[in-house]
Length: 342
Image 1: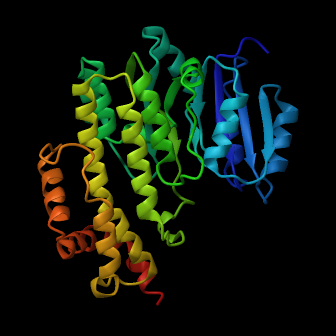
Image 2 (image 1 turned 180 degrees about the vertical axis):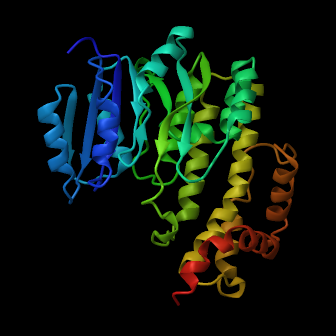
């Protein structure tokens, strides 16, 4: 194989239905300078058989088999194995455009930035992010780009981004084991803070297929509040220890605190998975959740937006019932089909 330019890391767990489409979308571009690293995370279906078949047929496909340890451990194993100049991540139930590598090449030739962010397409959702990308492209300073990437949540996912492996290794960046909510975000956020240059490209090179993914049917996560608190506090710790100056840290900490306050809605909505919403039944639980997110990450009088101010005010005054009502109004309808089964 020629010198490796791209290492594409794909965690695989019981992906027999979508894995071939994913691999064909990458291998069809016939890039000898791209290695495809498949981490089989203890699959119990035909995934291993499919992986081994592709490994035999394609010299640039490398397979690693391990006992089930979760997506973070799988991605970390992929990073340990990677040899390319750049790292990209692809999920086994998604696929890429037929010009995936060429678009990354062209963006890198224009400006070989530490982080290049591209666009995604979520099947069936009709999401149009052009205006947001135009805003990011117009941002002049690196700090402004960081703030927009964070506040828009575009930095939350590893796919549709090109990372420089040298930075990942020099800074010893890895996904946090044991964290199953926000582990993607913490890795990407930590990497973003180390970047000296960021480029934004509104070119859709990554396609997310949600047809087989009904996340609302997942088991009730009783520790969702502790997971979300861990996610944000870990990000805040990384930020405080970064090389950014005081004003830059303040700006990003304020956005992180906004996300911290917003997590109250996710935690309340999680209880809707166990049955129809009931404030009386879960009042004590909601009170515990409010207490967990009540302490601001930064000064209590600095806010990202008016909504941030209102959320902090409701949490500070322990106005639990209004927070419950907002959650039920905004998110409750998504869970109705499950309540009908009772």
